[in-house]
Length: 247
Image (cartoon, rainbow, N blue to C red):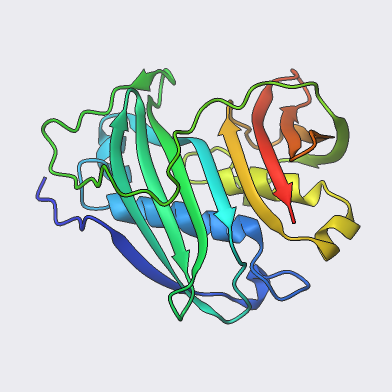
């Protein structure tokens, strides 16, 4: 495939009224969605685009994500998202992000790890960059850390229940990754949401929810952060676990 992919993609977005909260600041799951959308856009016209993988019976799935919010942008503010690939570590494709204000201030930094899986069997596939000219920046880091597994902890109390609906489903017929963050944020008391801002979140995706599934969120105060889980009710399967920090 003739690859004209830049080494770093830069895209601008203007925040709409429905993308901000009561404080007129961007909702965290909206920024998460914008970053994920930028990742898909960067892979377009390459060997690793949605269409190219679909032809091979494969899809990208997000496995791990860590974001630090330095400041949340405001309603009608134009922001710029930068994203770039950091190559492959074992089975994971690595990708980082920065979110900048109109003046160039760093609003958010994020790092992520992705997997390619077979659509039919759900088996993980190796990501082969050997014969690809997809550009990578091995030594450029938005957050200089290696994402690992969030260790399982004692489950907290149930704070939120939800039935997966049409609006939650993405092009792969699974719940969009940003929805899990929305459910987790929604599970916190209104006083927290009114008085604090989300400073960072780290999330591991473990299984997939589908239309009609009933899910619930648990949270436990772990001292420096909240340990949260999204569980599927019918079989008790853990869909994701997260560390949430409020300031």
